[in-house]
Image 1 (spheres, rainbow, N blue to C red):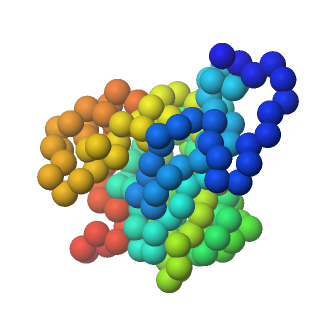
Image 2: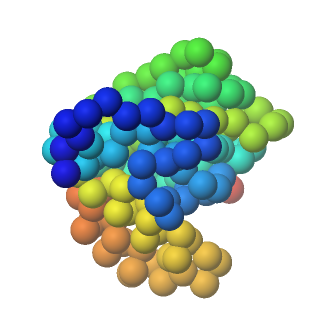
Amino acid sequence: MRATHPFMVLPGASRTQGAKGLGGEISFKVSGGDTDGVWTLFETPSLPYAGPPLHFHRRQDEWFYVLKEKHRFRIGSDEYTIQAGGSIFAPRMIPHTWENTGVEPGKLLILLQPAGQFEEFLIEFPALAGESADGVAVDRLFEKCDMEVVGPPLSSPGQ
């Protein structure tokens, strides 16, 4: 339900519960429900030399703001290194991925527009992300959330 009053989110708190990424708990600062699905904003931890597989969103633009550590991004065929305080935009339908290239855990602030089903994706994905994950089930979840995996993470062998 769209927020009709101001709200505050304390450090470490989240508007959506149970969302996890590769680096741990994800904190939604503005939920898609707060904006009638127009956009969502979340903070995600990032482990050194870890990140999502190369993928694209069919209906969402994605904006990344580096809060902590240095991160490498691949968007299309180009690569960028972004320091804390820098940001980068990944348009919908363009394959992209990222990884923390620092030695310490990092942190990103990510905005998706429209919100789509990304919150649901981050709640369901951890159950599929283990070593014994069924690739078909992962592909189905990406498809359900209007995304498609098209390559490995940046730190995969051969990258």
